[in-house]
Image (cartoon, rainbow, N blue to C red; front, side):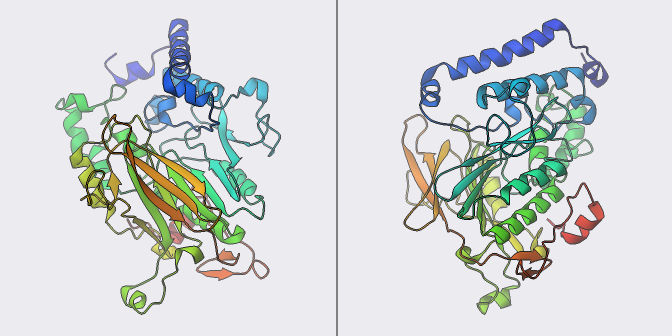
Length: 439
């Protein structure tokens, strides 16, 4: 099949459908029944959330015609079915898809809207994660398309449930497969789009190995298009952050994120923007993290088996991590990457302070003596030798008084109604006015 139209129009035969099912089933059986991983999951409780690799690389971020082709839709449908079966122990035809909270067979399940390319609704989940801590696993793949990650109705449903969390909850950890605070790669994204320089060179026949086999776009374009900071998702991302800030203030919740996908370790952070430098130097405008409802840390810790990017790519990301972002200054929000990795894996110092380009995992637990939630990012010292070095990030419990976000001011809930910015897919003009879209 040489042309896009031939690939998109290729029929789904019984043998192809059987081969897709056989692949997913055999792969899950191979991984879940063998080796140390099988032993671990037989003894350690786990909660899982899918991303594109549970279906096919970049699923949801390809052009509409390709995504709606018969073969792609079958891959998405069966991949999602086996994800629910093996990773969530759920079969929709048996367990149902009730939307009402607590009515599903698994009380933690949050059923969202139907996906555009798969015949399933999204399946997020909310779990008790120990004393005063809850974990939200947000499904950011089932409803994904090139210009949307999660639908407005699903957001509405999720936020309604979060507002009903017990009053004693202090920490809400949100699992997002892809980091929401991460160095921007806008230049690379523009160059790889269909009218970009690299895309034109690839389409002309040069560097053909850099093109994917589906529609000959640049191989890395779907990865860049997946990111929350991609141009197509930027407004939704900003809206989501502002809504979480309002939730944090209203319910006195410290919100943190855990993510993976990028094959290295990093720590992003949102916080209150203190204003201009002169004001900051006088000691005004700065809010310490315990009292800052906008203080939200994004722990980025990729899967243990992921090979890190090459050193030049790591150096580039480390350089980009130091850039300033004015995206949400309009709403008093600053975004930075934290230089957590000051000490080297085998030396006293290291040159790349913002990223750790080695296999890693993260341990998270609440410190009962301080109320802090402590993330310990464990980075492999030498590949395959089983020794790691820890980088600790301590997240303070909330110490502000509950309130309501009303424009640029904070209003006590007894004196004002909660105002929300409309989801960008409901009212794009309102959102563009409310959120400064500078990068």
